[in-house]
Length: 328
Image (cartoon, rainbow, N blue to C red; front, side, top):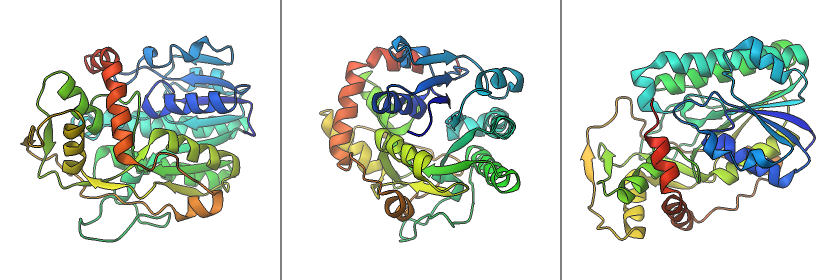
């Protein structure tokens, strides 16, 4: 890595903490400051073992707090912004929190990166592009039109636009990555895959929105980390890169595979009323990332990945239940 003293915001959350682990393992001499406000969706328990390393420190700060975040950032050479409110259901109930964290927080980081001449990488989502018809062969690419469907994706789209504007207007050294759906260790139990696993572990019947035919493009969080690392070091400044591995499955197929691996009947679940604005299908074309940066994912066997994650949640049931019961 070209950078030696970095800040990872949202570093106690699912994707952020996995990125910290990835960077610390690959570049053990890099100084890492984890910034997280520890909302209901994150916990110090996720990174407690990481803080035993002399090169890793933690600061409990909200990225909307400009003055305090500046004290942490001003002497760093890289900001990687994972901090975000990210659950669609919650964005329908309380969009204000999403606006503050995803838009105002991003604005603060961009202004501080500009003021102190710091390299900035922005973590975003494929959900900014809206959805695709189930039968369509269309895929999102870096030139796809933004069509957000929820307060979550709308605020992430707004934050992307801020990064693009600051990069062009102020020559900020910035890049953006929009990734498909992640799975892996330390994911909050409110998310689709761990929700099904933890329900079964806690003797609760899984539930499925609508008809279960919504399609998601799944990627292991370690592969996401590898791609972000490549973009930070070798990506073109001012550019956006889409991250995915063409690993598309509908929700009912994923749930039935989980049920099979956990020795449950394939009909051991209930359908529930669909979520408002529920996107039908996401599909990413990762050609730019693959060709420009030679991205080669390691976790290409999704069923194997599901087995490993089921085992992880079995071993870490207490961690998951504690986080799931944390006050929202």
